[in-house]
Length: 200
Image: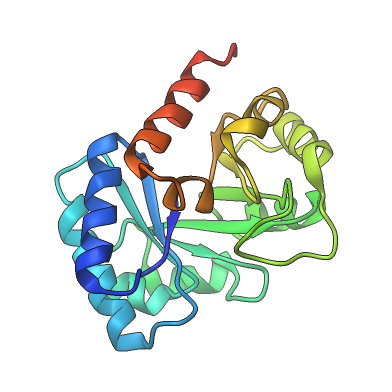
C-alpha cells in the first residue's frame, strides 16, 4: 500500500494508523513533494506506528532515509540506484524491492539481489505516468519465471483486481484506490478479503 506524507503530520499519522489497524501488510512511504526533513519526520513517525505490528514499513526511492528511519525496506525505481548499489547503503538485513516494467528488468533485479519485485504498470495509474503498459501479459510472464515475491503495481482497484490475481501474482500494491476512498480502512479490508477469497 502506497501512501504520501499528507498535508500535515497529524493527517499522515491518522491515515497510517487507520491502515495498520485494518491489517495492511506493507506501507510504502512515497512522496515527491516534501523536503528531506519533513519526509524523514514522516518516515520516523511511520516507523513508530508500525513497530510491534504485522505491518512492514518500506521507504520509497531513498536508501539513506530508509537507514535513518530504520525502515524494514527500501523500494527502488529504474531511475534510482540498483539493488546491488543500494545494498551497500542499507546493509545485509533490509529488504530491497525494485519496480520493473519488462521481464528483462525483472531478471536484472533478481541478478542484482532484490528481495522482491514490483511488476507493471498493469493499468493506467493516478500517481505516475507511463507511455507503455506491460499489463497482464507481463504479470503472467513473471509469475511463470520469477520465484521472488512480486507485487502487481499500477492502477489496481477493487474493480480490476480479479484479472490481476488470475495471472498468478498474489500480491498487489495500491495507492489512490485506498487513500482516496471515503473510508480507507474499509477499502483496504475489502481488497485484502478479495485477495484471500481468490482461488490459488
